[in-house]
Image (cartoon, rainbow over all chains, first blue to last red; front, top):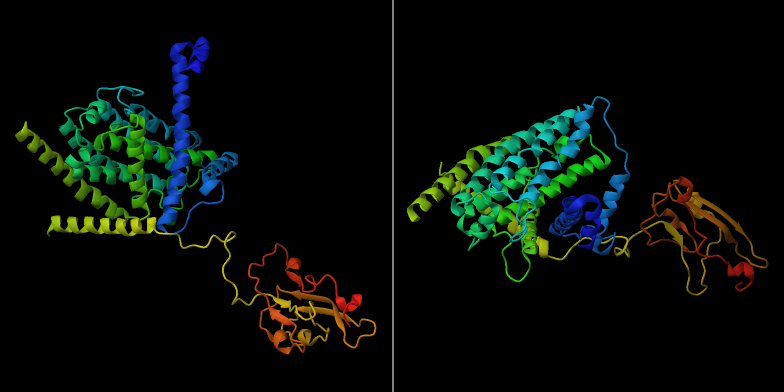
Length: 327
Length: 151
């Protein structure tokens, strides 16, 4: 608070709030990424009956910090034949939509960074933008694996955006609102219980949208080297990582808001509850990653178009029917 | 076709998979934390070393060069000298080039004083080839036969 007053003298009240907010959010997101990478490695380790990182700090807690410092210090390589502007712009752009979406999620009863009556639509629209920067990265690298990865990513996100949308739509039907705050506040029981099919489809969909195993064919280390970020090094590569894990948190928080009652919970403050639920969703995604093998591309596509979308459509129709009869 | 049945079966199999990894997630780890924990190497035959006999507290190499002669890889470089008034020679230099040693054990079999054995060391590593030459007399900085403590 005193910091805000001190800054307000130079920047004005709004400027001070903006600066502190941005610093706070970015600081937390950085911490979140470091924590999630550490958690991912720990979960991976323990599922394979090994301890994961243990050397740097207590239980390897500083490992990701050390990794980040290493990435910061590495040389930034640009391929000779790369499309320079697009190549340099993609890692910056990949992060923006995620950040915009993050600002729309109600973090507590009365708090949102940006309050919108139709927040859900904006979120759905924005989360499709990430894929453009991924394709920019893949295309501009001028590398066949990167292009393949980028193209796969586009096809995958288009396919899986639809079931996620339909799953969210059935929640909207139940809540009778597109405002995320109203959706979260209206949950006497979590919508995951009222809409179990939608919840499962949403979980599958966000796993695919964040390009995580078993849907990680855009990156597919064993067949595409690194997919769209093959040619990126140092901090530019770290930006993609940063965006991926932030995206996980944001989509996890969105899932928590849509299906698990958002900030609502006893005793603890709302933000803590939201984060706890978001991390629970993320843990589920990690668990799935280290359980299931990667899908083949055609399996992935037929799974989305032939199974998820019809089921999601059916779910929406049944929800609408039941609601029509009840109301 | 029976699509609902197939979906249900597939979904159940996914849950079963999650169950398997979930069970392993909470079980204790099975890997060896290598630099902190060391494996049991008591049965291991590592690089050749000189035996320390408890009666004398030192080795019993008489620099007879039997090991050097039988060695198929020519690993040994041995020099000896006779302490004053002694009947037997004593080794003054005993180098073994571990980079060419195949651990065949012929030297151990042929040694007349049984003063060669496999060590229990297993994590030998070096950056340069000269560093793989082991000085087998290094554990014996002082030879009691030369200082006159033993005859």
